[in-house]
Length: 218
Length: 218
Image 1 (cartoon, rainbow over the protein chains, first blue to last red):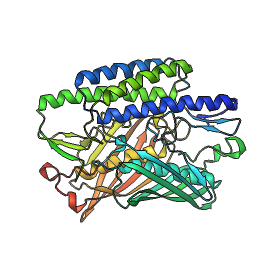
Image 2 (tube, chains in turn blue, green):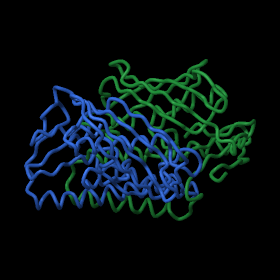
Image 3 (cartoon, rainbow over the protein chains, first blue to last red):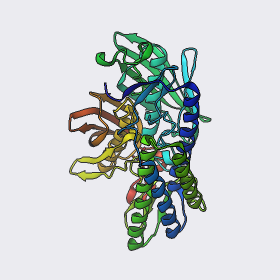
Image 4 (cartoon, rainbow over the protein chains, first blue to last red):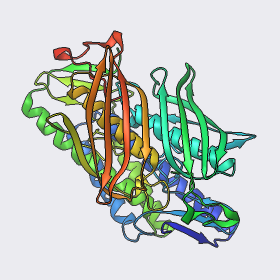
């Protein structure tokens, strides 16, 4: 299956590469937020645009591939830097850093102005995006990774832009299907509930080391 | 309700502002994609990072607000430049430009490497994000705007990164609830089907001009 790679980067070197990736990813993230809410004059916007284009020209000199893919390292660590929710080098991702805690998987992060839907509130689709990822991670943690088959999100109240917590747990497996449930909360309580059915495609079963397929980040 | 504004920008001036917004948004978009797939040396990444930070410092000199909000202009046009799917100044947004065509709403756009989930494929949550928006737009077009109450997405096959088409139509209204359905397709056919229930909050009903609430971008 294309987009999956096994690599053998020395542990120290990988740790350093992660720092560099996080640094450029965080810079791009701050830029995206600033672009949304800026109110500077047109000449200043133009000045900023030229700097951005110069940065892009440097980064465009050489590409890893048409997409980052899912990369497993020999020391057991994953590099999924392009992932739209977790990717440290992807400015679209908050990024979420998931913690596996018993039978729960959770993450806390801030959703800034670039995640807006209704005025002042997090976009309902962004809530679905981060719930899909935490539900998939709960399926992976329970040993039942898969591509999303069905995702259902029920919105209980508007979610203010700012700090959020997502949390999920695995409910049960039925053959190649895994069922997970989860929530997105803020200080105001639970804002949305999600349910995901994850299906492991037969052809990618066991694609990663230790029998992991790496899917579940569907 | 906070985050909603009525403005009176002259039509010509607004047209020019839209060009500037699109220009900086597109630059930031290209940067985000380049950041994900770059394979340049660490010194070059550092050089790019300094340029990005310089651009951010310029844009950060003055902010419109903590988020962009939903802005109605006196000539009937909307500015929702911060929207996570449509916002022309939001690098997280593809951005989708929706066409209302009879009882259908559709958009075609490209999902690049920054929308990856499984290796080489569009993130299932990104599919939910763009479906939520087109479903909400179909509800708006049918005169039944609302915040998303429930979103259900059924994934039929993996979606390759690249050009996609989303399309939605309104099914029926029941009191303050509107039901919409839609699809996300590629050249390979329908990849996902979505269904949304949109609920108009009583307190924002009629917040915009001409009785539009502006919600439906939930």
